[in-house]
Length: 68
View 1 (tube, rainbow, N blue to C red):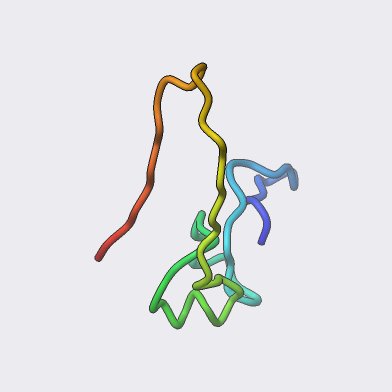
View 2: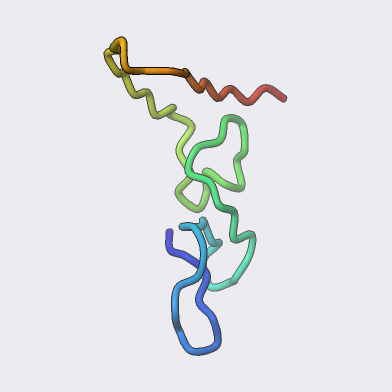
């Protein structure tokens, strides 16, 4: 995984998943369930789970779920 490179070789934007020897699909993702093409280029189906202890200073919680 690496970011897109401009004409001068500078990295631009987020890290992306690329197929070998091609500049496609160039997806800005690291996890996907059921996507065999993405799995073939290194995308994992294993979720990244982070745990935090909430305190009285916390004002919001953001939860992201993707369902097809």
